[in-house]
Length: 396
Image 1 (cartoon, rainbow, N blue to C red):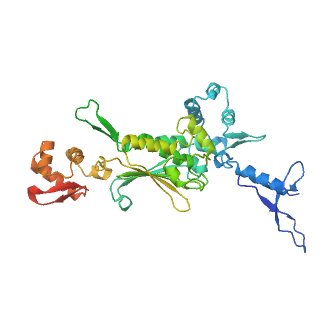
Image 2 (image 1 turned 180 degrees about the horizontal axis):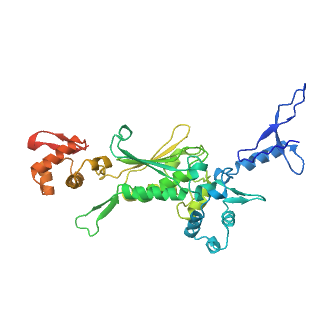
Protein backbone atom coordinates (compact mmCIF):
# COMPACT_ATOMS: atom_id res chain seq x y z
CA UNK A 1 0.00 0.00 0.00
CA UNK A 2 1.19 3.51 -0.85
CA UNK A 3 0.41 6.48 1.37
CA UNK A 4 0.51 10.06 0.13
CA UNK A 5 1.09 12.86 2.63
CA UNK A 6 0.41 16.44 1.56
CA UNK A 7 1.27 19.38 3.77
CA UNK A 8 -1.51 21.83 4.49
CA UNK A 9 -1.59 25.23 2.86
CA UNK A 10 -3.38 28.55 3.24
CA UNK A 11 -4.01 29.39 -0.41
CA UNK A 12 -6.85 26.92 -0.86
CA UNK A 13 -9.26 25.46 -1.30
CA UNK A 14 -7.49 22.89 -3.42
CA UNK A 15 -8.73 20.43 -6.03
CA UNK A 16 -7.70 16.86 -6.75
CA UNK A 17 -8.45 14.56 -9.72
CA UNK A 18 -11.66 12.56 -9.61
CA UNK A 19 -9.77 9.41 -10.60
CA UNK A 20 -6.15 8.95 -9.51
CA UNK A 21 -5.89 5.28 -10.42
CA UNK A 22 -4.48 4.15 -13.75
CA UNK A 23 -5.43 0.77 -15.16
CA UNK A 24 -3.80 -0.63 -18.24
CA UNK A 25 -5.88 -0.04 -21.34
CA UNK A 26 -8.42 2.12 -19.48
CA UNK A 27 -8.88 5.88 -19.73
CA UNK A 28 -8.86 7.81 -16.44
CA UNK A 29 -11.19 10.65 -15.48
CA UNK A 30 -8.89 13.69 -15.29
CA UNK A 31 -11.53 16.12 -14.10
CA UNK A 32 -10.73 18.00 -10.88
CA UNK A 33 -12.95 18.12 -7.83
CA UNK A 34 -13.05 19.77 -4.37
CA UNK A 35 -13.02 17.16 -1.63
CA UNK A 36 -13.93 17.30 2.05
CA UNK A 37 -13.62 14.88 4.93
CA UNK A 38 -16.54 15.51 7.30
CA UNK A 39 -15.96 12.27 9.19
CA UNK A 40 -13.87 9.24 8.34
CA UNK A 41 -14.79 9.24 4.65
CA UNK A 42 -13.59 11.57 1.89
CA UNK A 43 -16.46 12.87 -0.23
CA UNK A 44 -16.85 15.42 -3.01
CA UNK A 45 -17.88 18.87 -1.77
CA UNK A 46 -21.34 20.18 -2.65
CA UNK A 47 -21.90 23.73 -3.92
CA UNK A 48 -22.69 25.22 -0.50
CA UNK A 49 -19.73 23.38 1.02
CA UNK A 50 -17.41 24.79 -1.68
CA UNK A 51 -18.66 28.30 -0.92
CA UNK A 52 -17.95 27.68 2.76
CA UNK A 53 -14.41 26.53 1.89
CA UNK A 54 -13.72 29.73 -0.05
CA UNK A 55 -15.11 31.87 2.77
CA UNK A 56 -12.86 30.09 5.23
CA UNK A 57 -9.67 30.66 3.25
CA UNK A 58 -10.51 34.23 2.19
CA UNK A 59 -11.23 35.28 5.77
CA UNK A 60 -7.70 34.53 7.00
CA UNK A 61 -5.27 37.41 6.28
CA UNK A 62 -1.74 36.47 5.32
CA UNK A 63 -0.18 37.63 8.57
CA UNK A 64 -2.43 35.27 10.54
CA UNK A 65 -1.73 32.18 8.41
CA UNK A 66 0.65 29.37 9.32
CA UNK A 67 4.19 29.69 7.96
CA UNK A 68 5.06 26.17 6.83
CA UNK A 69 8.80 26.87 6.83
CA UNK A 70 9.06 28.32 10.31
CA UNK A 71 9.82 26.35 13.46
CA UNK A 72 10.15 27.36 17.08
CA UNK A 73 13.91 27.43 16.59
CA UNK A 74 13.48 30.55 14.46
CA UNK A 75 11.81 32.45 17.32
CA UNK A 76 14.02 34.58 19.60
CA UNK A 77 12.60 34.58 23.12
CA UNK A 78 14.41 37.85 23.89
CA UNK A 79 12.41 39.68 21.22
CA UNK A 80 9.16 38.22 22.54
CA UNK A 81 9.97 39.20 26.13
CA UNK A 82 10.97 42.73 25.07
CA UNK A 83 7.66 43.10 23.27
CA UNK A 84 5.60 41.78 26.17
CA UNK A 85 7.27 44.13 28.64
CA UNK A 86 6.90 47.14 26.38
CA UNK A 87 3.24 46.41 25.73
CA UNK A 88 2.58 45.94 29.48
CA UNK A 89 1.13 42.54 28.72
CA UNK A 90 -0.24 40.45 31.58
CA UNK A 91 1.98 37.65 30.27
CA UNK A 92 4.98 39.43 31.81
CA UNK A 93 4.01 37.87 35.15
CA UNK A 94 4.39 34.41 33.60
CA UNK A 95 7.80 34.90 31.95
CA UNK A 96 9.67 32.93 34.61
CA UNK A 97 7.23 30.04 34.69
CA UNK A 98 6.06 29.71 31.07
CA UNK A 99 7.83 27.96 28.21
CA UNK A 100 8.41 29.67 24.89
CA UNK A 101 5.72 27.47 23.36
CA UNK A 102 3.17 28.54 25.97
CA UNK A 103 3.97 32.24 25.48
CA UNK A 104 3.64 32.00 21.70
CA UNK A 105 0.28 30.26 21.95
CA UNK A 106 -0.95 32.74 24.58
CA UNK A 107 0.08 35.68 22.35
CA UNK A 108 -1.79 33.95 19.47
CA UNK A 109 1.19 33.92 17.12
CA UNK A 110 1.39 30.10 17.01
CA UNK A 111 -1.02 27.16 16.93
CA UNK A 112 -0.55 24.11 19.12
CA UNK A 113 -1.27 20.74 17.51
CA UNK A 114 -1.09 17.16 18.78
CA UNK A 115 2.38 16.68 17.34
CA UNK A 116 3.90 20.08 16.68
CA UNK A 117 3.76 23.86 17.10
CA UNK A 118 2.79 25.82 14.00
CA UNK A 119 4.23 29.34 13.83
CA UNK A 120 2.00 31.93 12.17
CA UNK A 121 3.40 34.57 9.81
CA UNK A 122 2.82 37.23 12.48
CA UNK A 123 5.16 35.30 14.78
CA UNK A 124 7.81 35.23 12.06
CA UNK A 125 7.46 38.95 11.36
CA UNK A 126 7.51 40.04 15.00
CA UNK A 127 9.89 37.67 16.80
CA UNK A 128 12.51 36.19 14.43
CA UNK A 129 16.02 37.45 13.76
CA UNK A 130 15.63 37.39 9.97
CA UNK A 131 11.96 37.36 8.94
CA UNK A 132 13.12 38.15 5.39
CA UNK A 133 14.58 34.63 5.18
CA UNK A 134 11.15 33.08 5.74
CA UNK A 135 8.99 35.80 4.16
CA UNK A 136 10.76 37.41 1.23
CA UNK A 137 10.73 41.19 1.28
CA UNK A 138 10.12 41.50 5.03
CA UNK A 139 12.73 44.24 5.43
CA UNK A 140 13.25 47.98 4.94
CA UNK A 141 15.72 49.24 2.33
CA UNK A 142 17.00 52.80 2.68
CA UNK A 143 19.06 54.87 0.24
CA UNK A 144 20.22 58.41 1.00
CA UNK A 145 21.35 60.53 -1.95
CA UNK A 146 23.89 63.22 -1.13
CA UNK A 147 23.53 65.33 -4.28
CA UNK A 148 20.69 66.72 -6.37
CA UNK A 149 21.62 64.36 -9.21
CA UNK A 150 20.26 61.50 -7.05
CA UNK A 151 20.02 58.30 -9.14
CA UNK A 152 22.35 59.80 -11.76
CA UNK A 153 25.10 60.13 -9.16
CA UNK A 154 27.18 57.50 -7.39
CA UNK A 155 27.26 59.57 -4.19
CA UNK A 156 24.73 57.80 -1.98
CA UNK A 157 24.47 55.64 1.13
CA UNK A 158 22.54 52.35 1.29
CA UNK A 159 21.27 50.58 4.40
CA UNK A 160 19.06 47.56 4.98
CA UNK A 161 17.10 47.11 8.19
CA UNK A 162 16.28 43.54 9.18
CA UNK A 163 15.07 41.89 12.38
CA UNK A 164 11.53 42.00 13.80
CA UNK A 165 9.47 44.46 11.77
CA UNK A 166 8.70 46.67 14.79
CA UNK A 167 12.43 47.01 15.45
CA UNK A 168 13.04 47.65 11.73
CA UNK A 169 10.70 50.64 11.91
CA UNK A 170 12.37 52.05 15.00
CA UNK A 171 15.91 51.52 13.73
CA UNK A 172 15.11 53.17 10.40
CA UNK A 173 13.50 56.12 12.20
CA UNK A 174 16.50 56.42 14.53
CA UNK A 175 18.78 56.62 11.49
CA UNK A 176 16.63 59.34 9.93
CA UNK A 177 16.41 61.24 13.21
CA UNK A 178 20.21 61.20 13.60
CA UNK A 179 21.30 61.71 10.00
CA UNK A 180 18.51 63.60 8.25
CA UNK A 181 16.22 65.58 10.55
CA UNK A 182 17.41 69.07 11.44
CA UNK A 183 15.89 71.78 13.62
CA UNK A 184 15.99 75.49 12.95
CA UNK A 185 15.47 78.12 15.64
CA UNK A 186 14.45 81.60 14.47
CA UNK A 187 14.36 84.49 16.91
CA UNK A 188 11.31 86.70 16.31
CA UNK A 189 11.71 90.40 17.06
CA UNK A 190 9.66 91.64 20.05
CA UNK A 191 8.72 88.06 20.90
CA UNK A 192 10.08 86.13 23.89
CA UNK A 193 9.82 82.65 22.36
CA UNK A 194 11.76 81.72 19.26
CA UNK A 195 10.12 79.87 16.38
CA UNK A 196 11.25 76.25 16.04
CA UNK A 197 10.64 73.99 13.09
CA UNK A 198 12.21 71.04 11.29
CA UNK A 199 13.17 70.14 7.75
CA UNK A 200 10.95 67.05 8.20
CA UNK A 201 8.61 66.58 11.19
CA UNK A 202 9.50 63.29 12.85
CA UNK A 203 5.92 62.34 13.72
CA UNK A 204 4.82 62.62 10.08
CA UNK A 205 7.68 60.41 8.89
CA UNK A 206 6.97 57.90 11.66
CA UNK A 207 3.34 57.63 10.64
CA UNK A 208 4.20 57.29 6.94
CA UNK A 209 6.72 54.51 7.58
CA UNK A 210 4.45 52.63 9.99
CA UNK A 211 1.66 52.82 7.39
CA UNK A 212 3.98 51.37 4.73
CA UNK A 213 5.06 48.44 6.92
CA UNK A 214 1.52 47.88 8.18
CA UNK A 215 -0.18 47.92 4.76
CA UNK A 216 2.49 46.19 2.66
CA UNK A 217 1.55 42.84 1.15
CA UNK A 218 3.91 40.26 2.61
CA UNK A 219 2.94 37.86 -0.16
CA UNK A 220 5.03 40.03 -2.50
CA UNK A 221 8.85 39.90 -2.30
CA UNK A 222 9.47 43.66 -2.59
CA UNK A 223 10.67 45.38 0.61
CA UNK A 224 9.48 48.71 1.95
CA UNK A 225 11.76 51.41 0.50
CA UNK A 226 12.88 54.75 1.94
CA UNK A 227 14.51 57.07 -0.58
CA UNK A 228 16.01 60.23 0.90
CA UNK A 229 16.66 63.02 -1.59
CA UNK A 230 18.11 66.46 -0.85
CA UNK A 231 14.62 68.00 -0.95
CA UNK A 232 12.21 65.16 -0.15
CA UNK A 233 11.77 61.75 1.44
CA UNK A 234 9.87 59.06 -0.42
CA UNK A 235 8.46 55.94 1.25
CA UNK A 236 7.37 53.16 -1.09
CA UNK A 237 5.34 50.05 -0.34
CA UNK A 238 3.83 47.35 -2.54
CA UNK A 239 1.06 47.14 -3.56
CA UNK A 240 -0.82 50.42 -3.51
CA UNK A 241 -4.24 51.19 -2.08
CA UNK A 242 -7.03 48.64 -2.36
CA UNK A 243 -9.38 49.22 -5.30
CA UNK A 244 -12.29 50.18 -3.04
CA UNK A 245 -10.43 53.19 -1.55
CA UNK A 246 -11.25 56.52 -3.16
CA UNK A 247 -7.94 58.27 -3.89
CA UNK A 248 -9.30 61.80 -3.39
CA UNK A 249 -10.76 60.94 0.00
CA UNK A 250 -7.54 59.14 0.95
CA UNK A 251 -5.37 62.18 0.14
CA UNK A 252 -7.72 64.36 2.19
CA UNK A 253 -7.57 61.92 5.11
CA UNK A 254 -11.29 61.16 4.91
CA UNK A 255 -11.34 57.40 4.31
CA UNK A 256 -13.90 55.97 6.73
CA UNK A 257 -14.02 52.25 5.89
CA UNK A 258 -11.22 50.31 7.54
CA UNK A 259 -10.47 46.91 6.07
CA UNK A 260 -6.90 46.01 6.92
CA UNK A 261 -4.52 43.96 4.82
CA UNK A 262 -2.59 42.85 7.91
CA UNK A 263 -4.96 42.82 10.86
CA UNK A 264 -2.55 41.17 13.32
CA UNK A 265 0.32 43.55 12.55
CA UNK A 266 -2.02 46.42 13.34
CA UNK A 267 -3.09 44.82 16.63
CA UNK A 268 0.46 44.21 17.84
CA UNK A 269 1.77 47.58 16.61
CA UNK A 270 -1.04 49.23 18.57
CA UNK A 271 0.10 47.47 21.75
CA UNK A 272 3.48 49.25 21.57
CA UNK A 273 2.04 52.57 20.34
CA UNK A 274 3.31 52.26 16.77
CA UNK A 275 -0.18 52.30 15.27
CA UNK A 276 -3.60 53.47 16.38
CA UNK A 277 -5.37 51.16 13.89
CA UNK A 278 -8.29 53.54 13.54
CA UNK A 279 -7.70 54.93 10.05
CA UNK A 280 -5.92 57.96 11.57
CA UNK A 281 -2.60 57.64 9.70
CA UNK A 282 -3.15 60.14 6.90
CA UNK A 283 -4.91 62.75 9.08
CA UNK A 284 -1.95 62.60 11.49
CA UNK A 285 0.56 63.10 8.66
CA UNK A 286 -1.42 66.09 7.37
CA UNK A 287 -1.71 67.55 10.87
CA UNK A 288 2.01 67.22 11.69
CA UNK A 289 3.10 68.71 8.37
CA UNK A 290 0.75 71.66 8.79
CA UNK A 291 1.96 72.27 12.34
CA UNK A 292 5.56 72.34 11.10
CA UNK A 293 4.76 74.66 8.18
CA UNK A 294 5.69 71.97 5.67
CA UNK A 295 4.08 71.43 2.24
CA UNK A 296 1.28 68.89 1.89
CA UNK A 297 2.40 65.33 1.13
CA UNK A 298 2.03 63.72 -2.28
CA UNK A 299 0.76 60.22 -2.97
CA UNK A 300 1.63 58.49 -6.22
CA UNK A 301 0.30 55.22 -7.66
CA UNK A 302 0.19 53.58 -11.05
CA UNK A 303 -3.11 52.77 -12.73
CA UNK A 304 -3.15 49.20 -11.44
CA UNK A 305 -2.22 50.33 -7.92
CA UNK A 306 0.79 48.02 -7.75
CA UNK A 307 2.69 50.48 -5.55
CA UNK A 308 2.17 53.54 -3.35
CA UNK A 309 4.74 56.30 -2.95
CA UNK A 310 4.31 58.72 -0.06
CA UNK A 311 6.36 61.90 -0.69
CA UNK A 312 7.23 64.23 2.19
CA UNK A 313 8.77 67.50 0.94
CA UNK A 314 11.41 69.48 2.80
CA UNK A 315 10.20 72.60 4.61
CA UNK A 316 11.10 76.01 3.19
CA UNK A 317 14.30 77.36 4.67
CA UNK A 318 16.21 74.09 4.54
CA UNK A 319 16.78 73.60 0.81
CA UNK A 320 20.34 74.93 0.99
CA UNK A 321 21.15 72.93 4.09
CA UNK A 322 22.84 70.01 2.35
CA UNK A 323 24.94 67.92 4.68
CA UNK A 324 28.49 67.00 3.85
CA UNK A 325 28.77 63.57 2.25
CA UNK A 326 31.44 61.05 3.16
CA UNK A 327 33.18 61.56 -0.19
CA UNK A 328 33.27 65.32 0.33
CA UNK A 329 34.58 64.89 3.86
CA UNK A 330 37.46 62.69 2.68
CA UNK A 331 38.66 65.49 0.39
CA UNK A 332 38.60 68.23 3.04
CA UNK A 333 40.89 69.33 5.83
CA UNK A 334 39.42 70.16 9.23
CA UNK A 335 39.64 73.89 8.46
CA UNK A 336 37.85 73.40 5.15
CA UNK A 337 35.10 71.44 6.90
CA UNK A 338 34.66 74.29 9.37
CA UNK A 339 34.55 76.81 6.50
CA UNK A 340 31.98 74.67 4.67
CA UNK A 341 29.74 74.62 7.76
CA UNK A 342 29.94 78.41 8.04
CA UNK A 343 29.29 78.74 4.33
CA UNK A 344 26.00 76.84 4.69
CA UNK A 345 24.98 79.12 7.52
CA UNK A 346 25.43 82.15 5.25
CA UNK A 347 23.45 80.47 2.46
CA UNK A 348 20.55 79.98 4.88
CA UNK A 349 19.82 83.71 4.63
CA UNK A 350 21.51 84.71 1.36
CA UNK A 351 21.25 83.68 -2.29
CA UNK A 352 24.97 84.14 -2.93
CA UNK A 353 28.27 84.90 -1.18
CA UNK A 354 31.48 86.72 -2.12
CA UNK A 355 35.01 86.40 -0.81
CA UNK A 356 34.47 89.62 1.15
CA UNK A 357 31.22 88.40 2.72
CA UNK A 358 32.84 85.14 3.80
CA UNK A 359 35.96 86.91 5.07
CA UNK A 360 33.84 89.16 7.29
CA UNK A 361 31.68 86.25 8.50
CA UNK A 362 34.56 83.86 9.26
CA UNK A 363 37.27 86.33 10.24
CA UNK A 364 39.62 84.80 7.65
CA UNK A 365 41.71 86.62 5.11
CA UNK A 366 40.06 87.18 1.72
CA UNK A 367 42.83 85.21 0.04
CA UNK A 368 41.99 82.21 2.25
CA UNK A 369 38.24 82.42 1.65
CA UNK A 370 38.88 82.77 -2.11
CA UNK A 371 41.02 79.60 -2.05
CA UNK A 372 38.34 77.65 -0.21
CA UNK A 373 35.55 78.90 -2.46
CA UNK A 374 37.56 77.95 -5.54
CA UNK A 375 38.07 74.45 -4.18
CA UNK A 376 34.35 74.02 -3.54
CA UNK A 377 33.69 75.18 -7.09
CA UNK A 378 36.01 72.46 -8.36
CA UNK A 379 34.17 69.94 -6.16
CA UNK A 380 30.90 71.11 -7.76
CA UNK A 381 29.43 72.10 -4.41
CA UNK A 382 29.01 75.74 -5.47
CA UNK A 383 29.25 77.63 -8.75
CA UNK A 384 30.79 81.02 -9.52
CA UNK A 385 29.47 83.93 -11.56
CA UNK A 386 31.67 86.91 -12.45
CA UNK A 387 35.37 87.67 -12.21
CA UNK A 388 37.91 88.91 -9.68
CA UNK A 389 36.51 90.67 -6.58
CA UNK A 390 33.02 90.87 -8.04
CA UNK A 391 32.66 87.09 -8.27
CA UNK A 392 29.49 85.74 -6.72
CA UNK A 393 29.16 82.13 -5.53
CA UNK A 394 25.88 80.18 -5.55
CA UNK A 395 25.05 76.87 -3.91
CA UNK A 396 24.33 74.09 -6.38
